[in-house]
Length: 442
Ligand SMILES: Nc1ncnc2c1ncn2[C@@H]1O[C@H](COP(=O)(O)OP(=O)(O)O)[C@@H](O)[C@H]1O
Ligand SMILES: [Mg+2]
Image 1 (cartoon, rainbow, N blue to C red):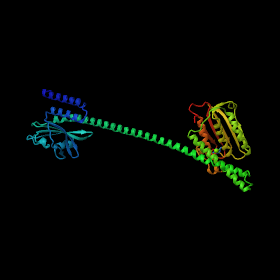
Image 2 (cartoon, rainbow, N blue to C red):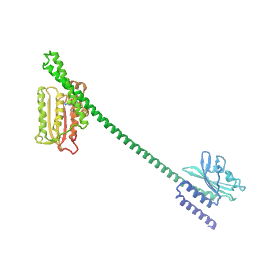
Image 3 (cartoon, rainbow, N blue to C red):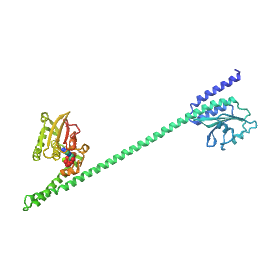
Image 4 (cartoon, rainbow, N blue to C red):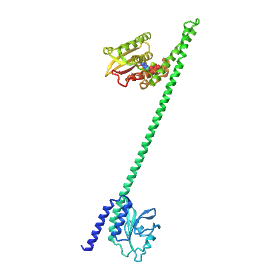
């Protein structure tokens, strides 16, 4: 290999190496272009190097070495060699001995003799052009065109790398900002919720207060009405005929119903407000069952129903810490319903059992039964399966809701089962043998 050719090849390889080694360090496009323009000027021994980008019908210089001007230097789309390089996506060489090349005025004034235009393909499209310009009359050669292709590829790859990096950083930044916004919105929501909760608590207290006052006001006049009606019935104000007597009996029945309703509402309101005091003491569960059964045996006899009790021995001896009156109240609510919803001649059974650390009490009847879809709603306030039927039976629809609340205060649970309409029902509750620490406080 001749000395010259060897020198040239060595220079090319050194340039390629330097460029790729330095380009990778560039952190933005300005730095990257400065590196390339410098190396190109040196390698091609050119006075001017310009990097320009294609922007809707114009080629606009972005960075230049060897010229400085405030004049606009755009090249409008047309027959110029610069546009040719872009459109054909291949380097174009031009030479003019007189320095008459078709370049923007600030360069043209310097009488450039030789130019090499090389298109730069960024993300698959020729988006920019590198113009390497000599003022002295020395042509660019085919080998220059070949070399510049390699260099331009390096430039394009680095531009793509920087743009991707910037895009990723922008996305991360945007996402972070969004995340921060969401977090802020969430904090605001929590604050709003807290405020709403506090307001609700205030309203709730006001509601409890309202119920207390109104129930009290409703109940007070009932006592004299009841007394007066009873006095009339007892003949204290003279003899009554049968029609008048029936009238006063109706008053008495309705007063009793109203009293029960008010009592139920007061119980629920007090439970809500945590104002029912529970007295937890050791009680024999079997004894509590006996006491309640006592009241219902007579009722059943009158209505010609059979009443049975099933208290296993282990339950008779079992002491559990409960509020005895409240547990009896729940059994009464169940038995009361059983009697109410079972036709004459039916049967009722009160049973107890110890199971998995709980005492389970059930009241089973052979009464009208409950449709499957109604079962989950039974323990909600004011719920009655069939308004027309329950009107016939009377009641407030609060009994089971009270039972549930009372049992839950004991750390227990309630349930209901029925094989369907006309097939009887079973209501049950279970309370833990050992009272949990927090459970039971009203
Ligand atoms: N043993 C039962 N058999 C059939 N239906 C029942 C029985 N116990 C309760 N129910 C249904 O559950 C409803 C709610 O009962 P409860 O809360 O005690 O209210 P109330 O007895 O005042 O109607 C009753 O109206 C009735 O429809
Ligand atoms: Mg009831």
